[in-house]
Image (tube, rainbow, N blue to C red; front, side, top):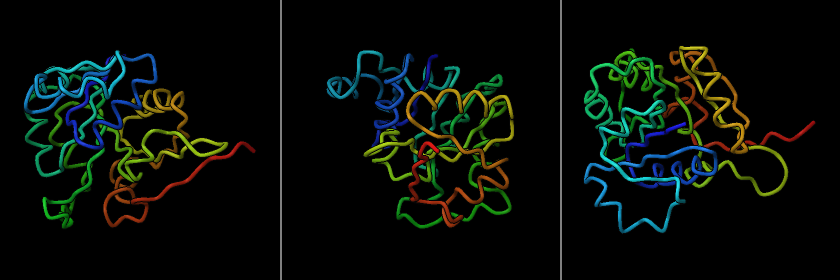
Amino acid sequence: MNIGIVGSGTVGTILAQTFSRGEHTVILSHQGGPASLAPRRAEFAANVTFDEVMVALQQPVVIIAVPFTVAPEVLHQIADYQQRIVIDVTNQFNTDFKKIDTRPLTGSEVIAKAAHNARVIKAFNTLPHELMTGRVAGPGQRVLFYAGDDRPAKKEFAALVKPLNFHPVNLGKLRHGGSVMQVGGGLGHTAFVQLDE
């Protein structure tokens, strides 16, 4: 599977490192182009490559790891996502970390509206960034909440993250599941571990 990641900050970097543990090609991108990432080559496994944002946006799975305020503009670069999966990891903050009111839509519905004809999955944004690796100190799997409106896409997403030691928990559609996952929804910055019973 080719996974494109737009954004190479803390979250984009951790998710690139996380998904590179699977049998995937991870395309990491930054607005400065691949040359801006070249000095960081040693941070990533060999199956992580650097490319332009437009290339990352055209992969079968796209992870949007840029600030919420610029995410719609980034996504609008593609006119039709042709049913590709777009994973929204954003939180609706502005540059001063003040909550952005997106009502009547949830933040993930704003992202879905910007990604025309994409199958959007909301995920990862509830976890502290250092726990996005899936690893836990001891037995068990890292619980990963997710939401989306397309059932087959959600199944594909769950299958994608399970081998990385995540225990995916489906919270329903973007309207309801997204509302409890976004800033102020109650699940933000939480961390749970699923133990074998």
